[in-house]
Image: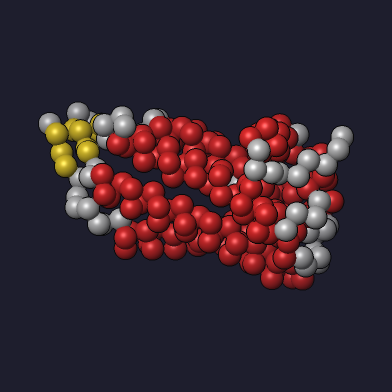
Length: 209
């Protein structure tokens, strides 16, 4: 199988996404050998995929009329939803790079090989399942279940990719992953906190009974 670099063309991106999700083990081997640079990965892979949950979440809230909870219809303002979409998207792009920095910095502590680009590839491609699952944000409420499944598969992808990209030995993979999960959780909390500073723009939810 030949190495397929992610490119701007649809088929190339689709091919890589499908390979990561359906054949992760062999695809990690291909990714390990690739020489794609961080700016190219951002432009051709991370940026388009990270937009999926942001855009679909906004469409789900606006296009489908908001959220229905116990018979109460919550309708967020347009400005609030769009602001939240933009802020979360930007913070996701930042979060991928910060996660890569942390993975790279932690490498010596787990006997792994440092490599900024390798760490970024791990952070970027591991997020594939989560971003693709973002399609289900078109269905507010129910979509959260599929997002959870996407998140779990993302963790599995990272577990498979750590020994291949960062050259960590098998018995150290799980501790390396656990620390990465802690960092990811902290990043998620940070993203949520920063997002809340901006998403109050546009006023509160309106309630239809």
